[in-house]
Image (tube, rainbow, N blue to C red; front, side, top):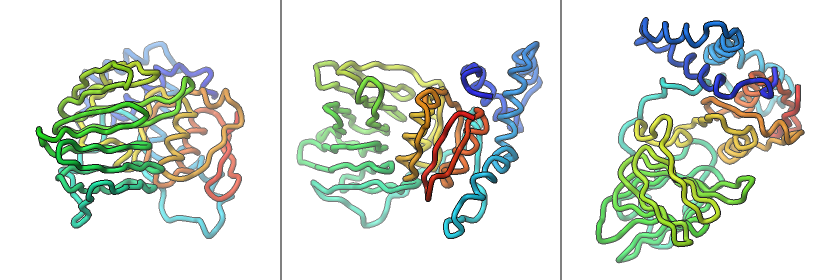
Length: 322
């Protein structure tokens, strides 16, 4: 089955239902609602079965066996990764941020992100930053303001200090807060560069650099493209979690193009993935997976959507039509 024939909304809702059914609090009312959603729709029932199979890992193991056979022996890793489809049963928060002792950064220091789930880095003012892979930030803690110049993606937990506003600058966009938690992501889209801001706690001010400003609250996302700021509410407010999913080793997608999924996976893990046809990159993906073994995540996605995954070398893959 190719995603060209899958209703992306049904695919996302099937993922949510599959995850919700695993909850011990599953109720008769939820079962009735699911039955109504499935009534007369064998295509939806098929999607639900596939998402439930992915959660149980059976489909993942089946799909990854083909890739594992071609994996060089020296690169074999123990155990299978965890996989779970996106939904209401997200992992609980891991609690307060554990700052790295002794890593206090003076003015002008450069922090560089690494592959894998990042550890928080403490700043000299009591704030903390986590960086995604292939990301970096220049820290300047001045007497009257705190400015961090970002390239890539970072999650910021700001220590309150009304006398020194805390700002993150990227591509001419400035995100300012007094004391809050928010994520800033620099992305490349078909229309050019864009900056995405997701607020977990408190309020931030987003200034586009072209005179447009907007206040963004917890549970909201602001996207800045071409100097225009657009604000939307999140389907599942990020304020319900402690840190972004990428900072805990997970990647989540809600009807995202496969090309953007690949971009995020490459940044977080360092793998290289080539899409053999632009049409493959336009396929929509909804799901949530651990990126500790990216080849397994890729194998599960192509199995779900009827594509073909080929290994071209160590941590290099090609996705093509099945």
